[in-house]
Image: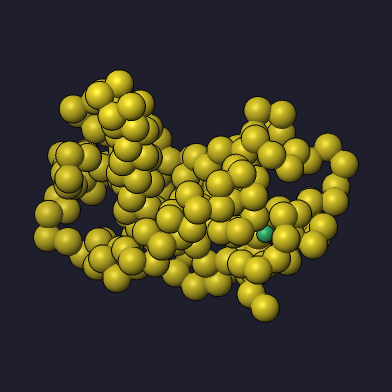
Length: 185
Ligand SMILES: [Zn+2]
């Protein structure tokens, strides 16, 4: 039996059985490929995870970093979580080569920068930690990485995950707008 077969609530493990932790109404705000099963799901506190779904809830103070199935139940859309997971798995090889892309340049300030698929990424160091900034000039989107990284390369890899997530989010929004079109109804 895999994690996929288990019931909503994932057996009541960890925070699923903890008072004050919402079971529903979470939103995925980011994804990250750790490269190996290097963390434990913060919801069930049991599943080893490589592909992290960052989950946010208006009535909970922290973002929880979760596995696919817990994330799917938390947002009440297991298919959507599976799609994100599949996207990360499919992208794993491209991701590995991302920090070595020839398109990376050093800015005058010494930061690594790249423009790719409509996104502009800047990797910069502050207080001994590495951060990322992702901009999408066509939409005015601009966001700093929520986490910081011990290496420049780690921040580069995280920027790949962020772009993947943003592209997927955009696709979902686009699909929904198509579905809502009166012409289709
Ligand atoms: Zn879990």
